[in-house]
Length: 256
Image (tube, rainbow, N blue to C red):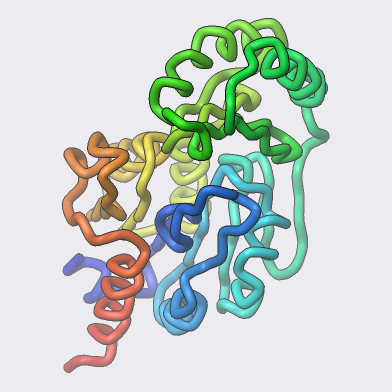
């Protein structure tokens, strides 16, 4: 943290979205960014080298759930684990992989055969997520689905990304760690902070550790995931704690 405060222009601040900037909710489409997050990020963006949101969500969805993000100075959104990129109002991305829609169609049939209650499918464009948060026994349902979903993923050339009561089928070749590492190199970063909450953020923590830069790993804590907290330098209490930490960091830039 000291390196970021001493040289903010050389700092990259990376953040996950769901569970970090936005509270986890039963219906992913009903998620909304923390009411104070956009203002805090805007102030942060005026001081640091770059603010990057690294998320499994599509870029368009992140902007829809956080409409004020477009006004954050210098913000970059790396969506779909880095396959998509939004910067200065422009989106760049390779063509979507054909395996995803095929897998989604098969998942609809699979869930119908299994007859599991409360399981929902989220179409993320370049990925498809299966959520069990609404089922009577979310953890047991998730475990019952793991094997069948792994088979579907293999059949269509996809990989499984586990998360908080969700299993996501997505293309291989990119994760949050790879996306963050490339961004740090691109921006010639001199320090880095990454804030996340879920298993997919472990790769970003590893990128921070392996960057050779002064780095801070922050966990937006929850009772659902403990593996990230065990690897973090700082643990805060969910999105409220993330916003409070970023506010404190920003205030530190103006202290003598």
